[in-house]
Image (cartoon, rainbow over all chains, first blue to last red; front, side, top):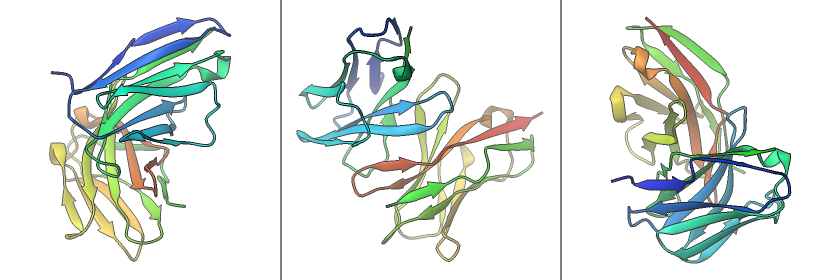
Length: 112
Length: 111
């Protein structure tokens, strides 16, 4: 019944590794997003993906890349992980861009 | 660029008292404004939105927000706070491409 799900919930890894976080929504929404929430709870948009159109926040390093195998999934790949990547990453979806968004439970990434 | 500001990092109220969480916005054109709530270790949950129409918007869990164009504000309100309302609240505005969130206000309701 979960509307927006993410796996894994926790991810602990070493610097330099490559990792992925998966996101799935069963709401039939057209737009999906990835956010990063830092330790001060500040929420920053990383990507939005709508009908194969990718909008990238220009401040996001190109080590981060979203991949969407279909409309219900938007996975996040991170290469060469750095200490500063430690944060909680949220996936979200909305019926169309600019509508209210539905968030997943988050993935807490810790880079050692 | 569109932006929102939440001037208070922390708001404390006693249970049963009215609560207000403040938000001001800066947009070009008509604003699309939202409130979300985040409970500990959870994702954000949508509470309410203003697109057009009545300035007083009603949302989930008894919350409402008042849109004030002259003051460029969209404050979140509830007539009687519950301890279970304690959480982190985010105001957001629709940007050209996506949603832009404020820094969040931590609401603590004490019994």
